[in-house]
Picture 1 (cartoon, rainbow, N blue to C red):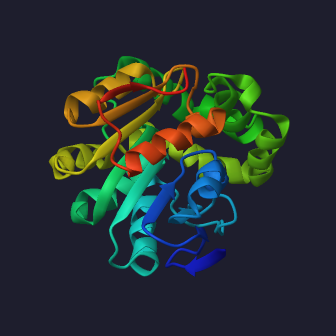
Picture 2 (picture 1 turned 60 degrees about the horizontal axis):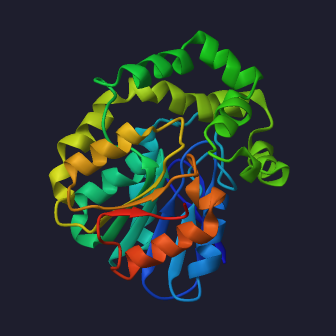
Picture 3 (picture 1 turned 90 degrees about the vertical axis):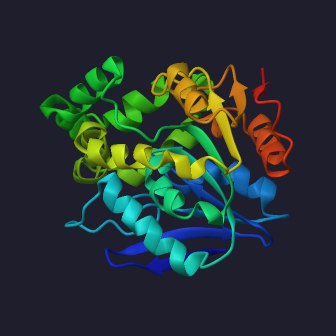
Amino acid sequence: MAQQLTLTDGRIHVEDEGQGSVIVCVHGTPTFSYEWRHVIDALRGTHRVLALDHLGFGASERPANVDYSPEAHARRFREVMRPLVPSARVTLLVHDFGGPIALDWALDHAERLERLVVVNSWMWPFDDDVLMRRRARMASGSIGRWLYRYANASLRLIMPSAYGNRRALTSAIHRAYLDRFADGDSRERVLFALAQSLLGSSPFFASLWARRSSLGSVPLHLLWGMRDTAFRPSVLDRWVAAFPHAAVHRFPRAGHWPHEEEPAAFVAALRMAIDGKGRPSQMHVGG
C-alpha cells in the first residue's frame, strides 16, 4: 500500500507494507524507495515495512523553490515520522545519504530505536579524509554542476562505478532510476544539491557526530559492501572504532548497494540482525 503525506514543503510518497514491528527504510541518492524492494518483499509478511521517497525523489513531489540539502531532508524526515510512526519503536535501516538524513531524528530519539542498521553510509564531516574531500570538491564545483546537469553524472557515471558487480545493475534497474531524473533541471536542483552538501553541510554532519554517544546502547548492525568505491572500508572502520558493540556483516563481492547486488544474502543478514543473531561482530555474508 502506498500513501502520500502532505508536509510543509510538499507531498512525500511512502511505501507502507505489512503489519507487525516497524522497519523504516531510508534511501540515499540518486535512488528512491525502489532500492528497498527486496527487503519489502521479504519482510512484509512479518513486519510493517515503511520506505519513503525523499522530497524530489521517486514518486514524491519535486517543488521548484525548496531546499534539497540533507539538513532540509532531515527536517522533513522528522515531520514524516510524527504521523507515520507516532510512538512505536522501530528498526531504522539507512543507506548512503539516508544515514545523515534519518540519524538526525534517531540521535534525538534513541529510546525509539529497536535497532539501527547502517548500509554503506556515514555521519561525520570529511575534514580529515583527504580522498573524500578531493572527490567532494570536484563533484561540488562548476565542473561537477555541468556533469550533473548535462551528463547525468550521478546516475550514468558514479552509480555504475560504485557497484561491486556491475552486471547486477541491469538495464531495467538502471532505467527505473534514470527515468526519475530525465531532465537536467531536476538533476541539478535535487542531485547536485547533495553533491554540494558533502562539503557545504559539514556543520550539520559535525552536529550528528557530536551526538553519537546517544547510540551507545542501541543495537547497531553495519551491513557493508566491501567493493564500494564511494565509501571505502576505511569508512566502515570508523563506524567500528566509534561503536565497538556493533555487529558487522561484510559482503566481500558487493559494492555500494549490497541490498541490490546480493538481495538474498542481504535479507538473510538483515533477518539475523532483527532476530538478535548478528554476533559475533565480525561476519562475512555472501562471499
